[in-house]
Length: 350
Image (cartoon, rainbow, N blue to C red; front, side):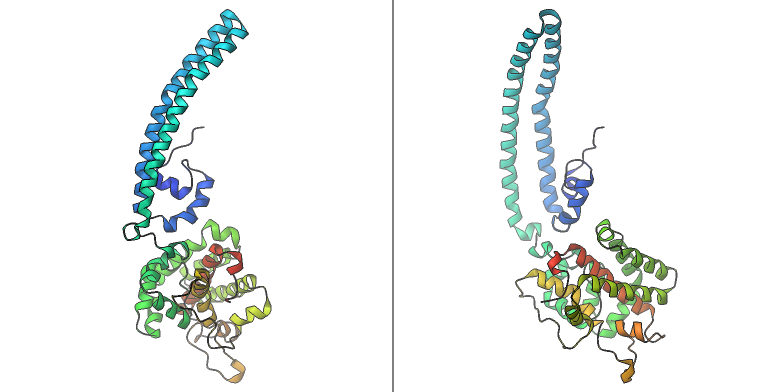
C-alpha cells in the first residue's frame, strides 16, 4: 500500500515525509519551536527537491523497465549466461549515470538548504527564541517580553500556568492589578481554562506516562456537569498522589507540602539554567497552595484554594467553583511539566 505524501508543514511536524507513528512522536518536540516562517523555507525546498529528484529518477525507472524486457527476451532466446551478461551491462549503463545525476541534484539542494538555514540566525525575522526550547507554548511570548513579571506571579500565587491555560488568559492573570482581580479572572475565563486543561490532559504523551490523568478528566466531566465540589476533592487528592510520585524522598517532599521557609527558591530571569526556571514556574504555585493551615490552632479557613484546608476543613468557605478551577490549573500544569521534563528535574527544586 502506497503511503500518502505530506506537505513539509506536516512532514516537519510529524517527523517524516509520510504520515505515520514516528512522525507523531516528533511532532510534540518540534512544534513549539518551528514557526511558520521556518516552515515556509522548508516548504519551497521540499517542492523543488522533490520535483528534481523525481525528474532525475524517471529515466532510471523507464530504463529498468526496458532492460527487464530485453533480459527476459535474451533468457528465452540465448540462455542464462547471455541474459546475466546483458543484465550486468544494462545495469551499469543505467544506474551509474542516473545515480550520479541524482547525487549532483542532492548536492545542489543541500547547498541551497545551507543558504536558507542561515536565515535561522536572524531571530527577529524567524522568531526562533532560545526560550522556545525550554518553555511551554503558552509562556514563550510572555517570558520573552516580561520574565520578571512571570516569575513574580509564580512566587506569589497558587495558580498553575505551565502549559495551560492559553497565553491570552496567562496575560490577563499577569496584568491583573491585585490578587482579588486574578481570582476574578479564574471565574471569567473558566470555560477556556477547562477546555485548555482537558486538551492537555487528553494528550497521548500525558495519558501514557500518567494514568492519573484519567481521574483528572473525570473531574473535568464533573465540573462541566455542575459538580465542582466533588471535582475539587478529586483534583486535590490526585495532586497529592502526583507530588508523592514525582518527589519520592519524604524529606524533600516536605519542602513542598510542609512550608517551613517563606521562600522555597530564589530565582530571577538572569538564571543560567533554564531547567531551574522551568521548575520554578511549575512548582512554586504548588508550594504556595500548601501554605500553613492548622485547624487545631484555630486558623481561619481560607477562601483561596488551600490543599490543607480542602482536605482538613471541608465546608463552603473552602469549596467553591473558583477554587476548583484553581486546583485544576495546578494539577494540569504539573502534569504538562512532568511529561516534558528530564527525569532528574521532575521533583524538588534545588
